[in-house]
Image (cartoon, rainbow, N blue to C red; front, top):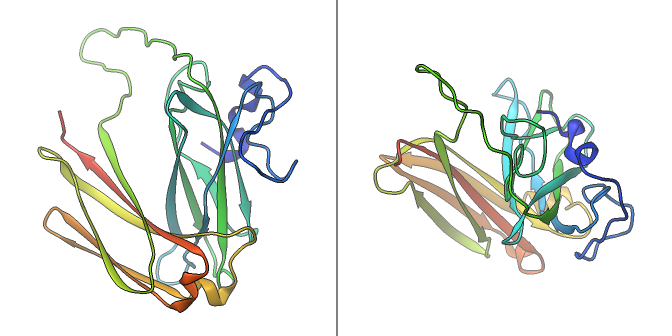
Length: 235
């Protein structure tokens, strides 16, 4: 599902009430929502397309308890970055059906990016009023559901080396794992700041290890690493 097909058209138009302090008109995730809590993510580093045909990074944002994602937007530092979000199958296309309390942004690039290219995800959260029910099916056909579970951990990056370890829950199987580096700064981070955090990922058995090393520059900013596991086979 493309980010340009966000959910604003599915919600009654009204004046936005953005609780989060953000520049007026800077982004549109709360447009058309009568009550909206704005949640801004960090500037997420997008890997350049070199060895891989299409570089990819994921970052998840979460609404406060009792809210669902009603709108999305993103800021880019390079037009070559393509940002989408993971929507759910269901009808009508609506908050609470297409979206849940969390939104997973996926950024990709098909060409080499400028050094330090980033994107910043935004979600507009509206009060949860419940979603529609699915129509029962017959025979052996089942409706789309949630066969996988995401286990997400976000940790602050500190100066020096550190390792973030994550595993699926008991009875689950690790399907895939990714990690992302982000910077909570007002403006996009400079290439020097982006290069001040280095990371690598390894999988040993059912556990994921992300090694991160932050230089002294991370003392002055809030840098984070988010580790995202896709787990299957749970109850």
